[in-house]
Structure formats: C-alpha cells, structure tokens
Image (tube, rainbow, N blue to C red; front, side, top):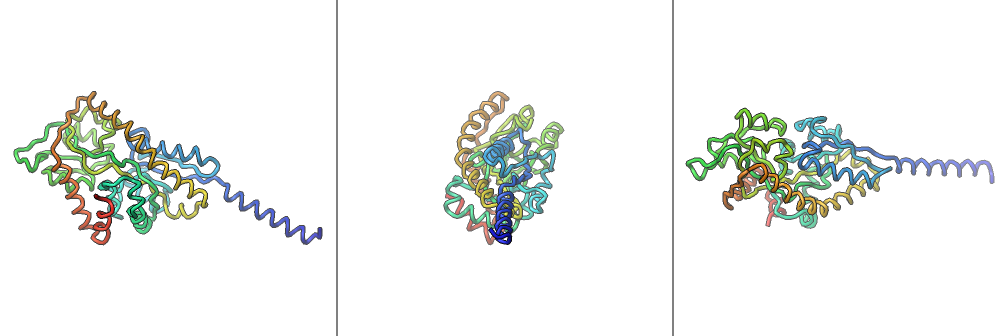
Amino acid sequence: MERRTYRILAAAILGCVGIVSAEAQEVRLKAASFLPLNANFGFYFKKWADAVNAKGKGSLQIDVVGPEAVPVAEQANALKNGVLQMGFIAATYYVGTMWEGEVLPLAERPMKELRANGAWDYLDKLHREKMNSVLIGQIGDGVKMHVYTNRPAGAADAAKPMAGLTLRSVPIFKPFFEALGARTVTLPPGEVFTALERNVVQGYGWPRWGVKDMGWLSVTKFRYGPGFFGANTPILVNLDAWNKLSDGQRKLLTEMALWLDDEWVKWRAERDVEEEKVLQSGGVKVVDMGPAFSKLAHDARWAALEKNSPQHIPHLRKLMTR
C-alpha cells in the first residue's frame, strides 16, 4: 500500500472514530421540579427521570433538583434561558411569558387524544416560540383540583360560598376563587403551612393528592368539590439543548414520554386509592358543592384565557374539550 493511500485511510478511520465518540458521549441534562422530589407530583417526575436514566446509560442522563436548589419563581426563566436544560414546571408559573400553557389543566381529553388530534403539536409549537422549550410530556393528567379550608365555608350568599375567606391562590385559580367570593393571596407552596397557622389564609387550592406530603394535613379540615381543572404539569426541554442532542438521544426522550402516557394511568390509579385513605385518616371532611362548582371554575378560567390570548385559546379549546 502506498504511503499516501495509507495516510488517507488512517485519517478516514480516525475521523470515523471521532464521530462514534461524539455520538456515544453521554449527555447530562439538569432538570428542576417545581415540587419537592419526595412529594406529590415531584416524586413521579423523579420516578420518570430515573426510568430515562436506566434506559439511557452511556447516552443521556437527567440530573433532577427540586425547588430548594432552584426557587420555583426562577425556574421558568432559567429553563427559557438555558440555565436549566429541563423543567417540570406548572404552566401557571410562566403565564407572564405564555398564557396558552394553562389550557393543559382544562383538558377534557386524555393524553393520547391530545397527541392524535393536533392539540399537543399546537402547544409544542407555542412553547418553542414563546418559551424556547420543547413540550415532550406531562404528569398529573386526570388528578383534579379542590378547595381545601381549615374552617367551614358557607357564607349567607349561596352564590358566593367562600365569601369571608382568604385562599392561597395561583393565576389559574384566581378568577374562580374570586367568583366564589373569596379573597386571594399568592404564595409559594413552601409558605402555605405557616400562612394557615397564622390565619393569613384560611384555605388553598390544591390537587386531590399531596396534602400530607406538603405537611398540610394537620391544618386542613375540609375539601370542597367536585374536582375542577387537572394537575397537568408539562415536562419541558430547553430548545437549544434539544437541538444539540443526537437523533438517538432525542428518540430516547420521545419514546420515554410516550411510555409515560401509559405508565401514568397505572401510577394514578394506585395513588388515588392511597390519597383517599390519607384524607380519611386525617379527619378531612369531603363536601360536594354540586356540578355547578366545577363548571364555574372552567368557565371563569376559559374566559380569562381567551381575553389574554384571543388568537390561540378558542382553537385550543375546541381541540381539548368535548
């Protein structure tokens, strides 16, 4: 073999080795959860990330931290700017950047239908444009929200049953709580217990799950329903980080998001049973306010969203409701 031909062949082999090495190099993505990783839905995000890590050894790993490492109020901007590469962040925490994310808790269709009818692609496009993030999955679908209080509601005006109460709120609850006659206060989850103890608030909005996890069971006496909204929380990947991943790494995340669609249904069924037992053991009284209760919640929120995003919300409402 001529020396020149040998050099060309050697260079080609080394080039191929370089490509393989780059492709095989393990990528680590830093992810933040808006809830503690040992509580409520934060636990399930960590469970999903662990499943990704088990399957992605040598290719892709997710390093998950909770709100103690990255405060909830900072997570959305950190994700958008690339300080975080992934986020499990309730859409209510980035309404200032993107109102449309809050349609997820209003969805009346299960995840597979949202993927099939174009709703998910539509939302993903908006997340890419406004949040610089890719919408790959969600956790919380089918777990309804409730109003919890440490004293009985029931003002003289039946149309305003929460009049006289101050409720801890986030943007998605505010129109509904005000329609019920309540005053609202915005607080991060970590401050709710102290606010209840000091009578700053007399109640809060929260999913069916997690009252004990958050340490609020001892200061909670009533749960009002039927449930409204959902606890749907998106799993997002920073768009720049996504684009830097290999095809194989993106495929892994996509496949694991689809796996979660099925697995979540099983996790939810098991946890529903456990959480009802927790409330019973804590002596929390469940109060049924009738179907008008949840209808008022949804109507109030859709109206607020349509006002803030008239271009997109009407179309999304058609795709996400029955």
